[in-house]
Image (cartoon, rainbow, N blue to C red; front, side):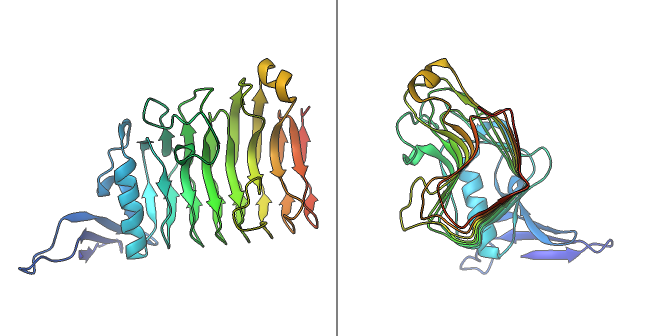
Length: 289
């Protein structure tokens, strides 16, 4: 790393890979900038950020590089991804206003039409403890037959999803929690999720433990979220009824969650809870079926 301390107190540094045999720096990886903290900006690690170039590989590499350096990775633009992103240990991703992870649904992209657990049915899979996703907008190129979730947390603890936005998913459980403890899903905005497909029986903004690979989730915090317009059409209604939930605690063994201060409107069911010993209070639910 080569750096300098700017006159205004910021640290500005070039990041390179390991030196070669001649003790010269390897390829440049990016720049660390420090206003109040040091971060890695994903654009400077190879991402284009124009909303149409496939940035999947560059973003995954940036996630790995930032975790290796112990620094947050920052998203500043609109990045198209065409296959699943995967968590790494120590992963922290932050977005600035206007940034977006845009999931394409063209051929060979997120084109899963089968089950939620398919490899191409998740935009971001989190399997490591203590991951933080803060301030990122996940948007899918809308196509009604696509089965996909924005974020899946699987068998990991203390994950935080906060201040994010999610929209234009179709046959979706937008945020899925599977066998995770002490997670936090707070202050997010989930909206405009709709399907008229009769081949999927559930559409949900936040789902806990419909799938449980290693047992039930416990002590989650689902607070301060806005959930609007989780809807289904006539074909879906005829097959399944209003199975379009704002928040769904799907299993009776999932317990001790705190679900407070959420605003949920224009969904099938506001909060559907099968678990026990949960705190559900001070939520606003309106225009539900």
